[in-house]
Image (tube, rainbow, N blue to C red; front, side, top):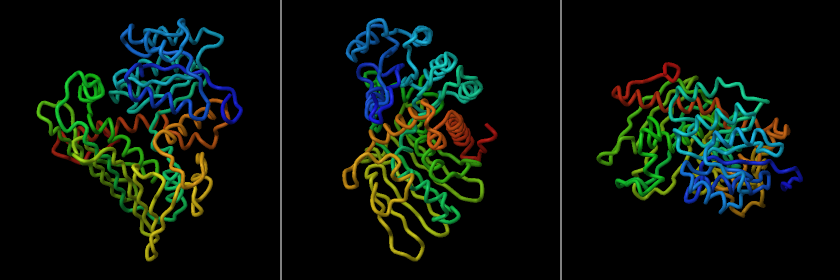
Length: 383
């Protein structure tokens, strides 16, 4: 049973076999609140790895599959078949499994970006899921309690009319050229597997989604400068983008995987005509909020100044005990479990959707086109 007493949701996984970082993270997220039980998997495109990984995870032998097509067909036919599936493959392998499971009536939890091409993203959005199957895109940073509170502060008018939005996501792990032996790097720098964007698709979409989630602003156009600093690299490893939002607000986004000294520096700053806020993912239990003409306030996760319901919606332990990346990821999973059970009406507007995934792909494509045209302003609606 789940922590709340509900029956666990039978979960499958595509990708995420032995040595896959993100598969491990998804499994922890699914387990943390006890909402899911992993019972089936097509964990690798290599049959030997798929079988070994399934055995290591304790899956029944007849529920270890060597292809997602086989898994979707077999599980949909079982009376005890999976109710949801996590897709944790490289980008080019999102569309096929997502389509197969939605058409089989199985809820889909998909890693971001939605697909490797905008065309595939739009095709996926046109599918009519069988039996009302739901879709979740794991922009997991939206699960942080203080990000939920930031969204609520903006919506309440506490910051006034938003003027400036700044989002950053710098890393340094791709500062040097990498070979095929580094599996995490090799597919991310390969256009055939990653798609048109490198850093912009891998981490830039996270920064973009976070800015959109908190502010609610709709993007009109981008002016982008995408660079591959490492010689021979086919996809960008550093991104500078200016954004124009409907209503007149301006934005700046920087994403880099060659910023030496930066480990995982996702941060967001939002400024309106009445106030501003600042949040960093490497210290996610604290957020600065300032009303113009008044001293800064340090808001803490679950602290006395926190504003319900958003700030307390997913706080598992008392304030002062830090929660972080895995808990935020688990919040997305647990709230999607509530949606699957028909109890998540309050959560659906908060959870990243298929529509968010399509917009994320529009953002990538518009930025790539802008950069190829000497940073010409490019409207998302034109791609």
